[in-house]
Amino acid sequence: MRRTKTLAVIMVAGLLLTACGSNSTPSHNSTTTNSTPDDINAPRKKGGTVTISNEQGQTWTCQFNPFNPANYLESVGFVYEPLVFVDLLNNQAETPMLASSYQWSADKKSIVFTIRDGVTWSDGQPFSADDVAFTFNLLKQYPAMDLYSLWTGAGLQSVTASGNKVTMNFSQAAQPYFFNFANQVGIIPKHIWSTGDAAAHPDTWTDTNPVGTGPFMVSPCSANNIQYVANPHYWQAGKPYIQKVEYPAYLDNGPANLDLANNKAQWGSQFIPGIKQFYLAKSANNHTWSPPVTNVAIFPNLDPSHAATSKLAVRQAIASAIDRSKVALIGEGGQQPAANQTGIVTPTFSKYYDASAVSSAGYAKPNTAKATQLMASAGYSKSNPLKLSIITITGYTDWAASLAVIKQELAPIGIDLTITPLAQQTFDDKLFNGDFDLAYYGEPGGPTPYYELRQILYSKNSAPIGKQASFNYERYLNPDVDKLFDQYAAADDATQVSLMKQIGAAMLRDVPIIPVTESVDWFQYNTTDIGGWPTEDNPYAQPSAFSVPDTGQVLTHLYSKSAQ
Image (cartoon, rainbow, N blue to C red):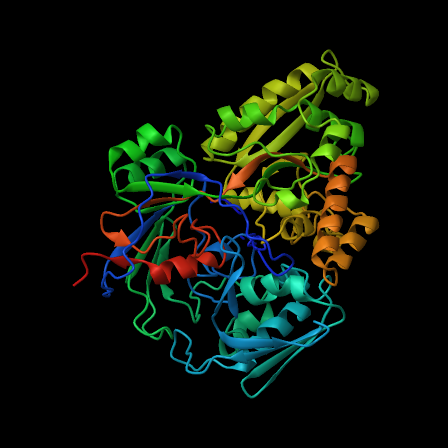
């Protein structure tokens, strides 16, 4: 599955993955074909099954801890819910969830949530403000669970409950973090997580039978399939309409794509080569809409223990040598656009993008001669190549094709690249703990570039080699860049744009990661029986099955046309 939130998703969040720093409406430029409007007046009856086709590269672990980056995508949205849903594709439109309303203080350093009445957990126990306060205070006790660095980076000082109110106090203006703490943190039940193994080790607890407030429950899970069934205690009256979700474990895109093309699965979230002939032409009910939201990038290990990738000249050479347009055309079949070295996704976030800075830095187009000179300055050449390995996720056929192009482009400048496909869990372990030379990966994002780039670059998101980082897996540590992120919260719109351009300049100067393509929110959907899908005309949520917590929004909109 593709980690794009939205963390979130990032952060996502998403993902990642997003919130309150800008009032602009992101462009909806995307891969869009065969789109049809949903009949908003169609009757909604309970019934039907939706099958998700989203290749993971491994079988399921059947763990649903919403604070474990390796499996929170299968829990948040499906089972666990946030306080407020923020739609990054629709001008940051908000939908009250477990909080029915909220009020900021004048200086944006304090926020009071009114917690929704009448909500119960899937085991029938009542939900309350105490559950919310417990959730956030647990993140303080166990920093590894604080995926968005709320206590260490966002300045969260206290979270208290009184009656049906929850008050959060911050040391600084915190409105930009709203997307993270209100939208991306799944609220957990105190009565479950305060006892037994959950209480002893909440950061590593597997949570195999998750109890949430969300529309679905896990029943059952096996290595080959997660079956979600409708939560009979769900607080949204009459919802969910769909009564069952099947989530098979696919080890490769091929079988997953066949199931989509033949309507054995209705909800796809992956790359389909030759999508027009292979998928869209198979049925008038097959559709796709994939808006660009974040980046797919090469993450070099910047720790000094990795002598080559921590060397700036080597990273500059890689960034100079890669023909991003060629990778996008061949590797992604033209379904994802080329990225740029600032990491600012265009046209979605064009106002933050400084094209002249990219040109001045020499990254506007590939430059093999410059890359060769940089490698020579680092002591390498075609006759004396630098041997590097890059980890990726097995079964991601588009990433494999993209890396094949990258390998060819790096060979002439003196880099002998070994591509190492890994099962998702193994990949995650190596990525999070810094056990790699290079990694091919994409972070979740948010409603402005701030969210994705803060995850990638903010020092407090990282960790020493051998320790699990929440984000910033490349181990980029730059106090000056941290200060730019810290200033963002209290800044006005124009200043936020300026700060993001300065952060983009740091991406050009330090090359902490190398964006290759702009990651779209992969989405294919079949309308033979299932209605209610998000579309470009009605972008009520990010449409992919790996967007957190957007999956919950999609699942509560979907319905079976044949349900009786």
